Length: 134
Image (tube, rainbow, N blue to C red; front, side, top):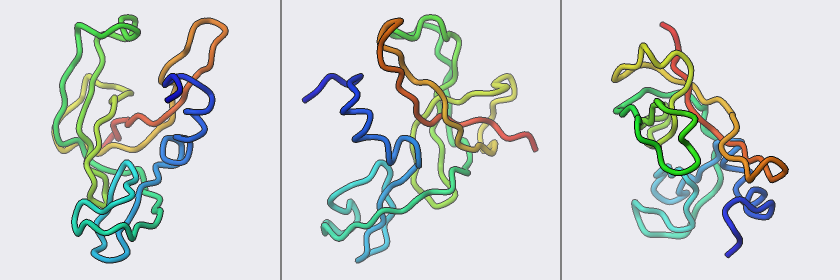
C-alpha cells in the first residue's frame, strides 16, 4: 500500500475527500460515509454513490491541547462528531470561530489543507467543518 501522503492515494480519495461523496444502499437505503462496498444495514453489496449536502450539526467535540506529531503548530484545535443532514455521523476538525463551539451548533463543510509532506512535498487537502453563525 502506498504511503498515505502519496499522490496516488490522494487521487483515490479525491471523490469523497473533496466532494463529500458516500454511498447509499439500493436495497435498504442506508447511507454511509466514507463510502462502503458492503452495506452495514443489510449486508448486501448493492451500493451507489451519493453526494452529501455538507450541512449538519455538532453532536460532540473535544479540544486538543497535546497534539500528535505533525499537528503541534495547530494547538489548541477542536475535533468533533458531525451528524450530516442526511444522517451519517463523521469525525472532523472543527474550524472557524471555535470560541463559540457548543453541542447541536450548525456546521457546514469547508475544504482546507490537511497535511504537507515537507516544504517541497505533496499538499493534501480535504474537508473540515466550520461553525455556522445563527
